[in-house]
Image (cartoon, rainbow, N blue to C red; front, side, top):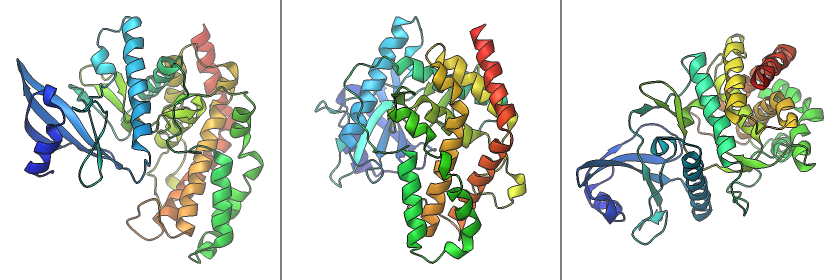
Length: 373
């Protein structure tokens, strides 16, 4: 909870929003600190979200907020032009401070932003059904469609090389060679297996570099938890947490969805016999993403959706194992070898997808044929 004096200072940045009467912690998220504030306004109460942006993760807050504002303002116009009646529930409005900025830096150096609170909506950490997976994937596919014609200039790369898999792989190899914490002996099989994937690890990046895959505005953290669902209909309403929005590939977002949604066990599961790909959830994701994107995706993007999933899972496995080798300096751990277990889970998930490659490809093809008919 934030203290009363700081609460008064924060809320004073938004005099047009009314008089703040309460602030409470809003659960969810691991990067930013989020609070729900209620303001007295003429005729009722307005609910807003105040969020402290983690500037240790996002080093250039002005760039982050410029991206967020451009994308949300564009989305509002797109929804209005396309006859969507509940625009305020489909995209959050970012509020300027009394100085006209879309972020506020407090006296301690922390950065804050304020957005609408979308009422009568909920989020899930993981899907409870294939319907949840479909709705979340549809929302991300729709997001791709909405921002596809965002005007130039190109969005800022707020985290350069975020999904540049060859760079991630090279950093992993350097960690292996350095063996800074003398942990290599305890994970040699995992290291060797990942190094064996090197012949194909750069296929997606090469397709991007060659222009085979078009660069798009991408969320870059596509997961069920970043979608709000309508409390009455369970429809996917809005894609949220747009800090990572920047240039990328559509198949990056599909890959993130597959990685974060289809694993049959937790991210750090120690019993690898429990780990595999949930085919029903994969099918729901493919249908949702392709239908949400509509006619946007090119034939090359559609043909490489599964490659996107494999690449993102491989990339994340190398990141977890690199952090384990370097002493757990990036991903927070709560027990010994947790990052190693995370890497092992990603490896096992990737193995399961590789083993089911033909079936998963046929699922994507069936969805595409159904969408085209």
